[in-house]
Length: 82
Length: 86
Length: 203
Image (cartoon, rainbow over all chains, first blue to last red; front, side, top):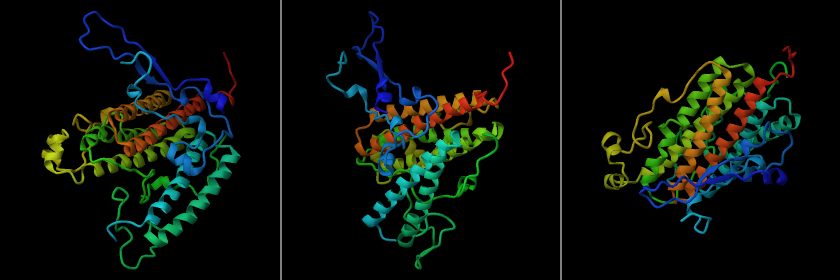
């Protein structure tokens, strides 16, 4: 299971083209999500599950689909941002 | 119905929500994996357990849905509070 | 895989019996009506929960039997999500006085609706049936469903980006995760309809 999760990153970024006359300071990196459902294919049987209480809190019964999201632009010291 | 609900209401409700969520997830899985015997067994297990804990909840806090027995003598089945109010 | 697998204790979805509980324990920690203005995008917006529910339930009548159950179950779950969004909006606005709503950018809404919920998007545009299609082609319709789930996921991300309310974001993360699982199931439905295991290939 952990191997499966390590095969992809759930967030990607790119740096938008900077024109000479762009009025605003550059945003740095632009982020987009690439969640687990893009990689799994047809779900195989007997994948590892959360407990019912955890599953409710996480929004999925199967660990493989869990993808925590937070505003990527507020991570201060991140790469070229800011 | 009191203006606020006791802590047991929230605790029991969340257990129901957790079990019913597992059922929701298994149902969607079975929709695309209709012959997975383990999942069918797990579904039946949780479906039975859900009925038990809902019955207990309904004895204290009134029916969750139409058709459940109303154990409350002092108000009609569909009085409050409603899910968005608690 | 031929024929329906008997499903004990099932069938509640068929008549949509209301159950007096939310799918997830929604909490809101700050009195911030501006967030209600954003959240309404998922109530009456193009990629919101109402559009999703109506889209999936409507497609069921013209799609192969193998995926009708999935459309029924996901479409029904979207109504549960609609009530979660309504709960958030209700909690964020119920005690707000007209002045507070005005400061939150909801002055125009107050003039039309007081604090009543209305099916419109974050910019106040009323809900429309043109937000979703019914093409009658199973692949076209399921691809739209996959796109709809990804668009709703993105909308939840943008709302989380705009919100500092930890409890609200917790519920929004739950709803975003549901979009991921639904997208997964619709992708599997496409694979089921593409499946050639029980057919002879003649080229």
